[in-house]
Amino acid sequence: MTPESAALDRLHNHLSEILGPADAGTLMAVVTAVDSDQLATKDDLHHEVALLRTEMVALKHELVATFRGELNAAITAQTRPLLIALVSTAVVFAGSLLAAVGIT
Image (cartoon, rainbow, N blue to C red):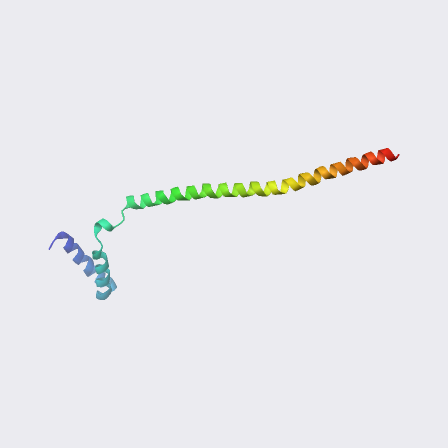
C-alpha cells in the first residue's frame, strides 16, 4: 500500500464515521476521479481574478465613455433650443423697447 493510498483509506474511514459508508464512498469516488493536475491552484485563481479585474476596468471605461457621449448629446440637444429662445426673446424685447421709445 502506497502512502497516498494509505492516506486515502484513512480519509475514507473518517468520512464513513461522519457521513456514513454510502455517502463516504460517493465522495471518495468523486475526489479520486479528478487528476491532481486538473485541480485549480492559488496561482490559477489569482490569474483568473486578474483577468476579471482587467475586463471590469475595460467595461468601466466603456460605460463612462458611453455615458459621457449620451450626456453631451442630451446637453447639446437642450442648449440649442434654449439659446434660440433666449436670443429671440432678447430681439423681441429690444424691438419692443425701441418701438416704445419711438412712440413717445
